[in-house]
Length: 194
Image 1 (cartoon, one colour):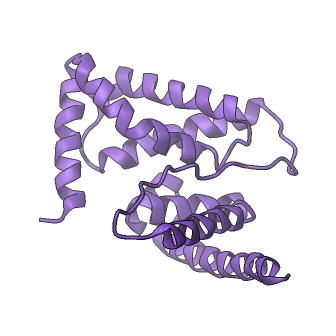
Image 2 (cartoon, one colour):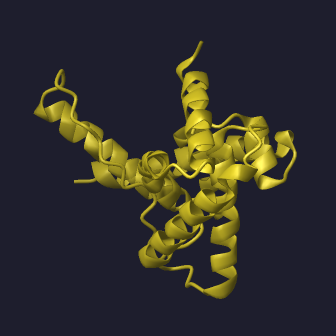
């Protein structure tokens, strides 16, 4: 049994506890999803305060709607579906400039005890360049990259979440990876210029 499947089984059990009003289970679920939902909605909104408000709205909706979770998809897909709708609603209310910078991925990386300081610096530089490259992608490409690679959702679930055919998801991921490679190449060529 793979760990993703095992994780979903645990999350389904937590959702059942949340549906019965267990505040500790909700707190546990909140801690698991708070940063992930924030990073996901940041692909839609460029204002950190608005993104934080959306996270709260999403988690309140999870608390209130836990009894409606039918276990026909992963818990993560259900929560990201709520997040997507909340983010789109926020976009309708708030007009943002296309030139604002977006903090896409502020994931804290734990140091690997097996790597030395040089490897750690290189890894951090690569992570920073990758975040910069992803931020330059279109919103559609950022969204599929985040869902497919950061959240590890299968293409079928991404298709359901976005309301598009699976082949469209595959095409978006393909072109997003191409664009990401181009952006990384540009950034790396700038980094190597003395």
